[in-house]
Length: 154
View 1: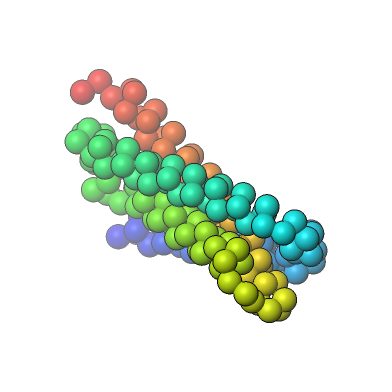
View 2: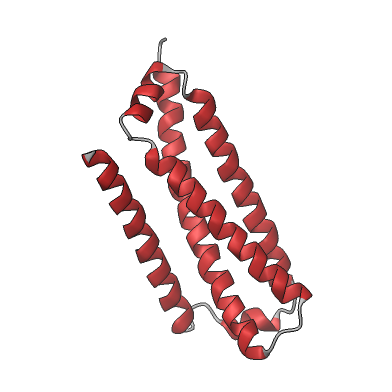
């Protein structure tokens, strides 16, 4: 039970810090929204491509986890909640990437006001950063699991 609570706290803290940092980067023009808007549709297509690829890798990571459950060491980690944040971070990253794709698609295909364009780009950039952070976290955890599988003599 303690591990489960710690996992939720880590996940929530990472999500909150990443979101606040992303908002800060956008709000204080470290990431220039006007520059993104001036690129016309190029940024949107790149955001869709990158988000789709990252979401695909995250889905593959979950598949690796599911396929490794029969290993004794991995099953023990799973049963004792040590792998919860792996699949939670993957799902958070996938959801974030889907929001990025939807925002970019709306910008590409719908007539929207300048104000709504700016809001959608804010959302797109913030969810893109969140997706990258959770992708990195998931990769770190997958490397840990793969190293355990490699060292497992069973």
